[in-house]
Image (cartoon, rainbow, N blue to C red; front, side, top):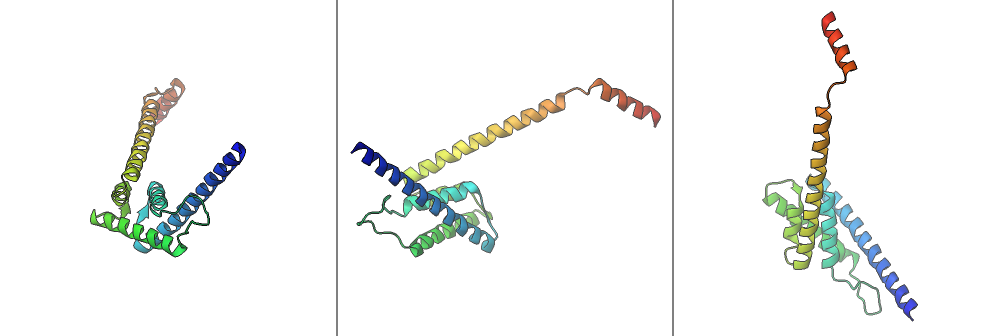
Length: 163
């Protein structure tokens, strides 16, 4: 009995992950189309956030059953298209050609839990990126502070005296 429950739970998890992957793929394709049509860009974080937003907003049950009503593909595309248009308008209103996380947060504003999730992930990414930049800057500074080796200094001195 326990093994059956565990197996069913594993199947549900697997189904949900496949569904999320399919949503992410379709959102990515739609974003590419919109990007080429409207000459704007979508970051990977933006596409991921739109995917998560779409997945949470669509309201299908996480597991197919006889009572589960699947949202037709046309409805998925329509909702994703509306999200994309809204994001484009938010960016345009801010006089930008690139959609960023602030636009996605604005789109997710009606779902407090989703907005909180997106905000937390954005802060994590921002902190990670700033740490990486600081490490890179420190490494460059250390490389610039290295003294010129005596052999190189002697060769440089001889070159200048022969000129």
